Amino acid sequence: MDKAGHNLTLKQQKALACLLAEPTIQEAAKAAGVSRQKLYDWLKQPDFKAALDEAKQLLFNDGLSTLKASMTDGIATLRSSLTDPDATVANRITAATKLIELALRCHEALEVETRLAALESQMNTKQ
Image (cartoon, rainbow, N blue to C red; front, side, top):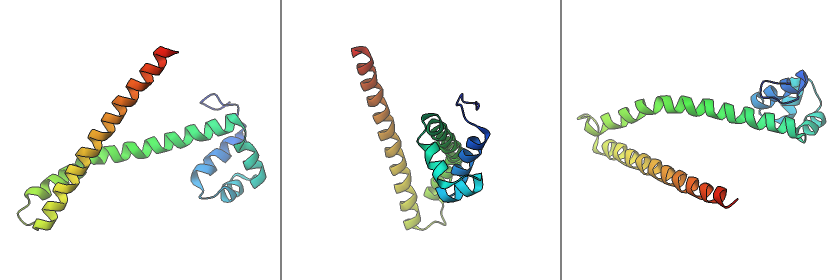
């Protein structure tokens, strides 16, 4: 059993890591030391598929955390471009446009999240 509670063999756990690291299923199978068909068979198993989905989500979350950590620096760079006397007008306009676009996207995402939470709450009370 792996850390997340899935009943996977060591070979399957290795295959999961290879699926995340290799660009194709064929290459993942080769790196894991199993046939491509065996890997496809495992992908049909609910435990294996769930473990793969969880691993992909963790990998994505790690990447997202890295992006979030550098977002403050990125915004600071855009803001400094707005007032940089050596920046061209075109560069200042581009920086201003990007900042406005980012602010609008954040606002839209928060709005969608709020509306989705309200809908989920309504659905849960009806059940």
